[in-house]
Amino acid sequence: MKTLSIDLPEKLAAEIDAYVKAGLFKSEPEAVLAAMSEFVRRNRVELMERFARDDIEWAKKEALPSK
Image (cartoon, rainbow, N blue to C red; front, side):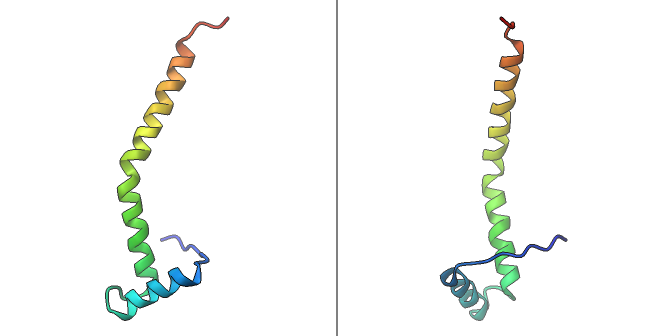
């Protein structure tokens, strides 16, 4: 597993701490990992579509005859 070191705004850190204290997460790293996992899950399709559009644009440019 890779370790990341991040700086959080105090307000966000306090909210994460509150979730941990309420028992929703075992630790702050677990809460951050859950949030990042959800972000990746929600944005995976959009990223794949963006890469596909970029590939199509590249292929169209390559297919055009040079002047």
